Length: 186
Length: 267
Image (cartoon, rainbow over all chains, first blue to last red; front, side, top):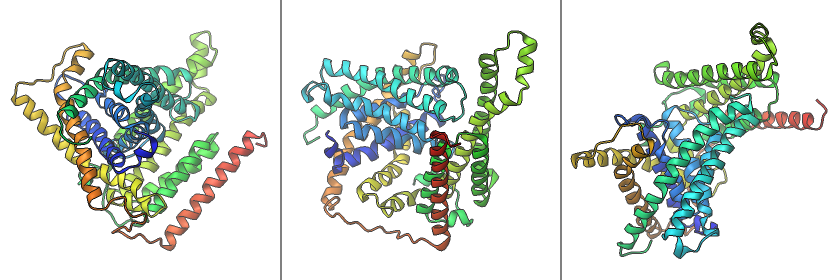
């Protein structure tokens, strides 16, 4: 989806639904914890902005991560941290850049899935890197680069990269199968 | 409605009565000022402003204690981490005795506390905005602040669907459990993650496919045809709102000027 198409009705609805879905998943896995899974640190929901970015483009992916994180923070504790919201936006934006690497026809083929995994990992590193190091550079909470790296960046980027690299291609494959059997425009 | 989930507390305080556009302008310029602060002397006035903003909102303790608990945990944990990291990594102390002396140094305490105070100031200001602004007002406020109504509508849509998707997740979990699905524990994080696929995939795919139906329904009702759009909730700025907007701009300009002067070496 080009940036012009991102602001079509479908693009705008995708932003709204993606945001709601990301926020709902965050809240669900935070509040209604499933027994034995300890999901707070796992954040499987991070695959939602990646998936929306991959399918609907970088703008939709960014808004899904950015607004979704603001809303889930507003639900879970009542405020928000703007740089972590931008970091979550980048997590969705980077998989959306797939349109610049491979053709539309290859999106749902092996080449597409491999690109999806790579971009999910890159997105996690860039997004969480932005959030952690802006915390350090702007002096939000942490004083040293070591803290930003070991207490914020590595735990967040590694868990998000694992979640994204596993769940996003599964979601893309499920979407491709669902679209194939659907007798209408998508 | 999303008010069921978002931590909005109804009230009649001056902060509740403020126009949401005035509050959003204040928060934007406040966060900008906070981002540009470079020492504790500039940070303390912002902390005072955020505390004043919070206290003026007259929020009940029973509804805000969870938020304060969260803020307190973050503040204490990060303060301790900052304090120990700075003392151990940057103090240059070679023996335990010297390290203990460094740990009580006011310079190290200040260096460790400043970023935490900054984070605390941000948390108090943003939490006050969330606690005092009805979720139904964000889209009309953005729409009447000059944003395109289409962009503002994204927020309206998102807030409309959050409770539905949470309910959908609960229903899917129950339906899958009735078919024998059990979330697996164990130590392998990848297996734990894969165990969630039957829960995550159906909700995501059905929500994604519904996008095209919703977009069609909106277009059939003429969404996006007109450039101009009116809002059911027409907002009007009172004298107090205008004063808040003007004060916010003064604050933003002041902190920007101070930051530029410091960057150019005048401070």
